[in-house]
Amino acid sequence: MVRWRSGTVTAVRRSWRGAMELDVALPDGTQLRALAYPALVGTAEPGDRVLLNVGALVMGLGTGGYALVVALPDRLPADPPGAGDSRDTGHLVKARYTPLQPIMLGVDEEASPYRAVLADADDLAGLPVVTADLHSALPAIVAGIRADAPTSRIAYVMTDGGALPAWFSRTLDGLRDELVGTVTVGQAFGGDLEATNIHSGLLAAQHALGADIVVVAQGPGNLGTGTRWGFSGVAVGEAVNATAALGGRPIGSLRVSAADLRPRHQGLSHHSVTAYGRVALAPAELVLPVGLPTELAAAVDEALVPLAARHRVVRIDTEGLDAALRSTPVPLSTMGRGLDADYAYFLTAAAAGRYAATVAG
Image (cartoon, rainbow, N blue to C red; front, side):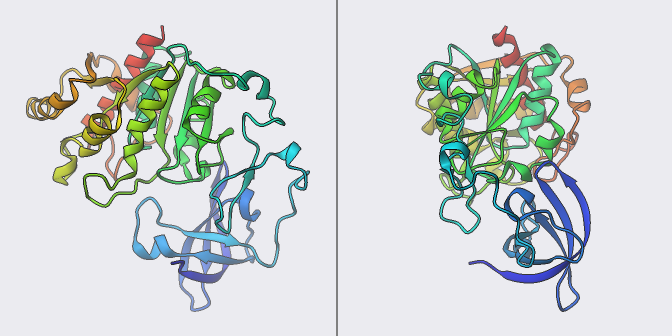
């Protein structure tokens, strides 16, 4: 259920592409940190009354720890230009049948400038597609690609397992000069291009954005219940299948950690074991960095044994990857742990990026 609050904006803390972080005072004097998406609710200013959803904040969720602005009820934004004619503005409804459902122009709709190139697009022609569980792997994968292929055209396909608005991600804002664009698929929205599903999103990344490498991962946040199947990262296996169905080259970025205190994520995370071992029906290349600590490497190798019947394990030299990771334009963080606190996680992601750069030629 929604936990509602009404308050007044006291300050704009900071802004990035698509989002504004606000200070909001409640009638009882409580101060909250809130997030507004101007494309949905308008641009907030000090003194504005705001309606808030505080559920994630009350629950203490890390990634979602904001009060979210639902409306500026006293100063509603104007309708977008041409809003009455979907032939010009699109008719893709995302976050469907929720109160803030946006209507977007699909990349392959008739009004899209990419309609002609995508109308009959059906083949990725061996395009390397790196699939990852968590959004936090994205900058590390990009760093690995850039280490060997600084001019590669990298696109990000964001699935809807985590945050739905791409605008939530400060990582994406910081990577804007590293990517040729973002395609938001499924219920996700706010990318440079909008696609109905992962298949059309992959085709858009190649044929509309001109990518020679694609990274697929969910947005910030990860839904999980601590059970074998109850986590949003199962979509990694579906991304492998979609890539293979379209003639692409699936490259698996594995979730490896020596720092996560939860047994199910130590060594090779059960997320990777389930997604690649049970959900991915097509073969992929699963990448590991050479030189992981001995005990960690042994645990990962053991966990990979049942996956080796379908997938090929590739081991990649890591020379130069440390420097690449330390020079990323955005901070590296996963579950609150930075590069040095969870080094194996980021190094493994960077190795997958390096391999993708190698096969992209």
